[in-house]
Each structure stands twice: as C-alpha cells, then as structure tokens.
Image 1 (cartoon, one colour):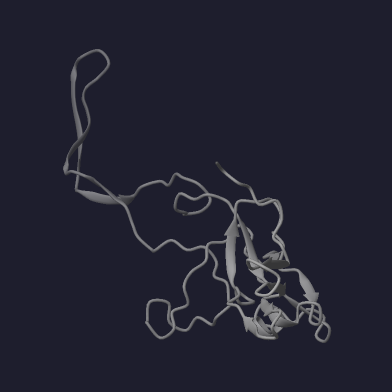
Image 2: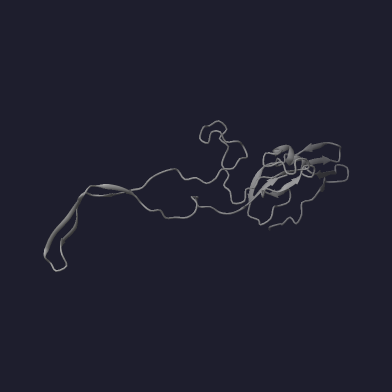
Length: 186
C-alpha cells in the first residue's frame, strides 16, 4: 500500500496512552517537544543556489533573475550575500544573482585557472584564439592548350602558400545543456 502525504503537519502527538503522550510542534526549523525541550533542526542555508524543474520558484526560494528585493523581508539572504550581486537602491533593497541563461563557474579561489576573478562577477563568452590553414602545393597554373586545341604554353609557376579558411557556426560556443529554473534560498 502506498500512502501520500497531502500536507506536512506542524504538530504531531504520539504515545500509547495519555500518561506518556508527547506533542511535537514545528516553528520554522525548530522542533519543540511538549515537555519543554526544543531542538533546532538543520536547515538549507540562505544563499544556496539550486536548479528546479519548475517554471516558478518553490516556496522559500527566489528566482535568480537579478531582481532587487527587500533587505528586511529577506534579511537572512541579505546576511548571506549582502550586495555581492548589486546594492539595489542602496539602502532598503539588494539584488539576487541574475543566472538566467548563464552557466555557473566555480570560483578560482587561488587555484590559478581563472586567476583574478572576483566572486559574483560575470564573464563574456570566449573562444580560445586559434587558426586554420589551407595549403596549396607548388606547381604550374595556366592553360596548356587554347580553345581550338593548339598549344599555347602559357603556364605560370607558383609556390606553396597558406591561407586562412572561412568560418561557419553559431553565434556562441557552448556545451550541450538543459534549461532549468535557478533559484536562491532566502
């Protein structure tokens, strides 16, 4: 038999009789037991970015769309990221990251692969500089015979040369990918 939970309960009472019955209640991420003890449960930290297969941000998350949001309404998120992705209006709001259409790259953190990058900064697209060459071998070029078949002997010698090859392709270089909704925990 399969059971489906329709809603997450905020209080649970358990025990075999009224003498040992305990009531558990949840407020945010704090579990309180009716005997007065309470436990703070682990919680997803503010500022964690996750991708969801939804068209809207789930409860407890904001879409990473660069929006300016309230510093008081989203106080825990403001403590986590401050103005790293924008200062908003400079006093009452701050910006969440704008990850729409972006790939996330791990911060270099002194590794030297992407040296000098500052956390939270973006990069434009890039394609490593390279060349393509097409070689033409040395030989004679011209017409050996005229249209009527009489020999003309007009041959021009040429040497091997290199030339750039034309380009084809799209407007960007990218790996295969799947679009999902980037969201940040508040």
